[in-house]
Image (cartoon, rainbow, N blue to C red; front, side):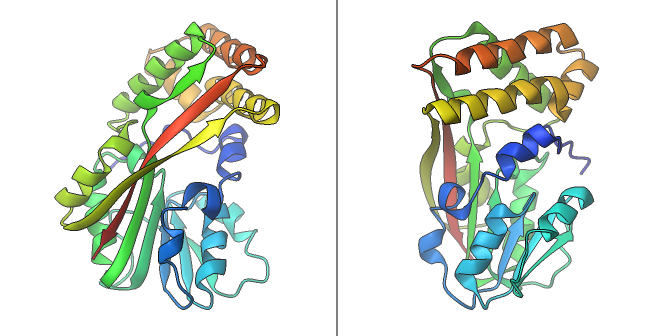
Amino acid sequence: MGDTYTHGHHESVLRSHTWRTAANSAAHLLPHLAPGQRLLDVGCGPGTITVDLADRVAPGAVLGVDASADVIAQAAGIVGERSNVTFAVADVYALDHPDASFDVVHAHQVLQHLTDPVAALREMRRVLAPGGVLAARDSNYAAFWWSPDEPRLDRWLSLYHAVTEANRADADAGRHLLAWAHAAGFTDVAYSSSTWTVATPEDRAWWGGLWADRVTSSSFATQAVDYGLATTDELADLAVGFRTWATSPDAIFVIPHGEILARA
């Protein structure tokens, strides 16, 4: 499909990805997990959510897959003594598994980066056993909000949408999940929403710092310049905007997500 991952796997990106857990990123799925289930985690990244899910379905077998061999190698390093979880490189559009192979398929922040999210959901549906559940969660960038006002963050959000559009992806995937699931052939779909909220001094410093680094050093920065959408000087100024925002004792940043639970 020729997908381009907007973020890439720079350290500043993995700084946020490794923060993610089943509790803070897959709470909508947790009540539907049970010991012994076979689970596939699509787009698993560094695997922090995957190993949490593996603990909850043990002794059920869990497989985390991602398109990046480098990040899969990192994920394999956190398996520890768990015998029920493995990681592999895979193509979300052509999963190397027979029909009905898994009781649970999970995808977190994946569909927003794909050129054909409906095709990906069809493939996830194919490997889902009858009665199984697909859980997907994606953010909706257009609905992000923050305080105090910072014009450089406004520019960052506009630029982020421009870069993802150039990549033929949808930064606002969270609002489309229900429609995409229906288009993929699911008829039993429940939609919900949840947020990440940045509001403590520690979280402000973490979030502002990682995005300051991402707008200058990640694949997003490279793509923004290569596509002629921004200059390196402008990106450096956006980084100052994030660091300035983070110093305010009143600063908040809210990241809304859409979620689906779809039954096969």
